[in-house]
Length: 455
Image (cartoon, rainbow, N blue to C red; front, side):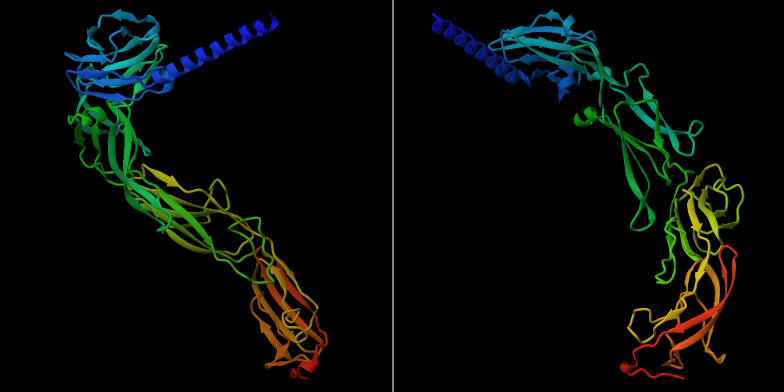
């Protein structure tokens, strides 16, 4: 008896699994159910799964049109914005293995077809109730500003529906993308060429409005409006063009390039990408759009630009920073009447305080590349003069830049080991003055290498 009981349980479970599998197969086969139409033109549109709809059908005109489903046993019902739960039965004609429903008038409605215990939901759009004719584009300067341009679209049939709305099976409103295309030209910055070039721009509108906002173009252009996508597919789409719009919008792209130095005895300050050890040579460059008439690079010691140290009216400026502190540079571009301004990001340049250190020994000729040249260690030294003497007061050499060094030679020959003397006068970017003097000890080098020595 226990064996029979277990067998019955197993058999029941097996049947349950088979039923679930059958339901799953039926549900899978139900997905993507479709209607066919006669009497006019129809465009099918895929519906998002979250809507519960199998398909959306945009019908050019529901008058005289019939929807068919391939089942004589199908039951039809019609519903509106409350959802499929409130569907009401409608009559359908049967012919062979097909049932057909004569489409009702109206802007749009849901259709549910029940077949074999499965429910298939569709939404019908009566396009004739949504058709919008447009005949012109004009510019609404009163509402526009330096970034935005408002276009007034001349529409006919002001009581028509501009947006095509439909509803999910739960009664949630959705909007069907009508696919209007608004095209015009503007400028785009080319990073490679470091310049602005004209480009075509297209904006897609899911519905038409009497006023449309666009980013103000950066060049003079015409606007063209076409659509919608359903009318275009039927060959009845419209297109209008505006007159030429004269832009007043301005924009610029800027960059700064610092001249790099590779002085092995200079102390580099990495706290600022553009700054460091003075003098710092930086080139500032701006590329501007068509409507720009006024350009200015502005240098200030204030991050708010309360005051200006210098102003440059060109788009490219080469400037050498020789004073200690933090400096700020920005670019301004304006149109002809000054109604639109554009300011660049602010470039921060930090010039470090000065330092100057002098070594007291080196070994010329001992080992090439290793302590074989006498050089100061420095940062932000803007003026420099160094004289080196031997013990009898004979000037051996003069250095005019802190990056220069003495190789231990006089008149092309290595000097003898011993004590030599330097005298330095220098000035830092921070205004600090250096009056330095001291001794330089030349440690005996390897004379077996055959260097000539000057006494």
